Amino acid sequence: MNNIINERYAPVNDRHIWVELTNKCNLSCVHCYNSSSPTADESLLSLDDYFHVINSARDADCNSVQFIGGEPTTSPHLIPLLRGAKDIGFGSIEVFTNLYSIRDEIISTIVEAGARVATSFYSYDEVTHDRITGKFGSYDKVSANIVRLLELGLDVRVGFIEMSVNQDHYEMTVEYLHTLGVNNIGMDKIRGFGRAKEPDVNDDLSELCGKCGGSNICVSWDGSITPCIMSKSWPIGNIKDISLPDALSSATLLAFRDKLSERPVVRADCNPECAPNCTPTCSPRCGPSCSPCFPYGRCRPAVFG
Image (cartoon, rainbow, N blue to C red; front, side, top):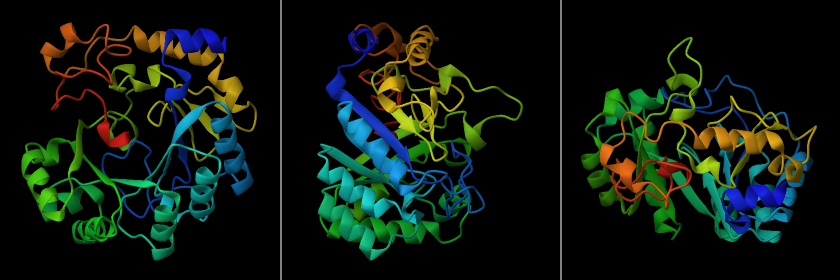
């Protein structure tokens, strides 16, 4: 089965794993796909569980790992896991943090591990940004921490998520981020998961970017294994009950990927000119490799890697 999946989708050495360290967050962003907040649950996994996850992922030829949440910098597991990910040979290590607050010890460990940092920034306008994060002062704190990390020589990747409250703010936000020294900037439309989903509306495959049609995998804060961080409604199993290699080669995952490949070619907010150019270079349809796609060459959430 594993060989079938690899042949039909992405090469094994292109595998990426998201590892959610907690669902708790110091912000309450209006669009959070995970519905994270200061009152959300801590992780149900122990440090030993997480080490088992990243070791299993590396054994399964995952070469890229991103630690995310919730807010991963609030987890006591982040520092040892960064060191562990370096020691077992991940080629790419990234921490996705809101950068509202980050301790010196975490920064130094990121540097030691040769890891990158990814974050989000929502508007050049302070009021709009803080309205989205739900925290007054987040604009100033995130800006200052971006500058702080860049001055240390760290690779900082910033994503902009467009929604009704910050519509048409992208270009001026990019200009502002450039003044801070940021050059790696991605953009995506809001996706209908978590708090961004309309009440009483089921999760929709068309809201996914399509990259989980390849060889990516996610282990959530509660141990759930899903194709990606946003596909929580399509679980493969739980790390307590099924091994990561078995999950990666499971009929459940293969069936999900087949179903994903049959979804509508483009989201409603994608550039119609994208569709004719999506195949055969894009996987599975209007997804990661599309060059003419909205916005600015991306029909996937570039902010998530």
